[in-house]
Length: 498
Image (cartoon, rainbow, N blue to C red; front, side, top):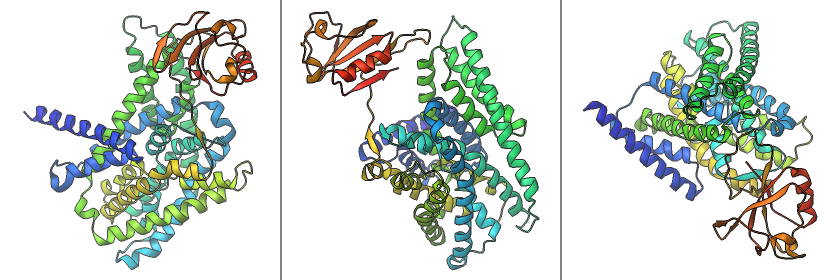
């Protein structure tokens, strides 16, 4: 009966979470915030009792592996190359700067709130929140279907996908110091050595496992059941994380780079694999945020000292710490406009990662650990509410947003097919020389294979009459020539179909 009840409760939570995600989309709010809220509602007064920090950490580890791997797969290296240096600087020095600024603020404010907190404990609280959250950034930026100028989206995703290692190292180090009463000797040499080893080993093994994963997927040839390719790639992702961790590297950095490598090489059944990891990522995000919501004690969260500190730290981080750290570190990168720098400083979302990192002090018995956890949880909610709901609006206000075109045609072609598919929307300029398909002069090796008109699809013939607004699915062996020809005919909407 216990197993059946567990499945019933789990199914109910997932069902309600999905409905909450739909409501969030209509309201323009982050879906992850609603998932968190569902968990908090069902965890209130132990309606669904859940108090395991260890199990929450385990769920978080699995979820972050897949979120980072999937995020890496969706990131094109050609997009992040121009902003790689800036992204890495924000992912490393940005984390340290944010932790120091916020840590100093917490240490200064704590006595006024009535909390005795050493400087190490204040830094620990800040370190747990020092990285932007990959789950929040990936899901919000991509669900908005909104393009950002100046390569801002790939840079923000690169930062959020690669800054967890630095925050993790800072958190573990400060947990160790705070566990000794905060009076232990701070060995800068050993700390820098540990950081260098983790980053170098994580990067090297991540790339190595990425190339190995591509080789395995392309050569394993599982003809009996193509669904097993997804299971094989999932195993590769977990192996990359676990082996790198055992080798004293940073597993989170490794699994992100593994996904980045896999996503930028040709692999068989790419569309199927991307669909699997997209669905699996959403499932794990829902489970993770539900678990975090169930874990928190709402009564403790609403204690005056927690609320005052949470509001103060949240406001300070959003309006001062993140902007100051970002603007200072991006100053050498002259190709970013002032509006772009402001936007980057605003999109410093916090989410699941800070809350997961805040469980480390609790498990190690650090002084004020429960207080730190509750403050971090409240700051995360504030960040999701204030920053998460304004990601799109801020981009529009700063003039950095543009409409991201999405094709109405969905294809699943093997990588062995060299021809490229594109979608062309018919406009009046295209019909100047005639309104039948045969009167439109397309480059050699190009064919219109399907038309979408008013939501209905059909295969055209030469005498088919076209109308403005028709969407043409075009296959070509010379896509560059097709792009030039389309521009010369006045085509405004041209989308590559993958």
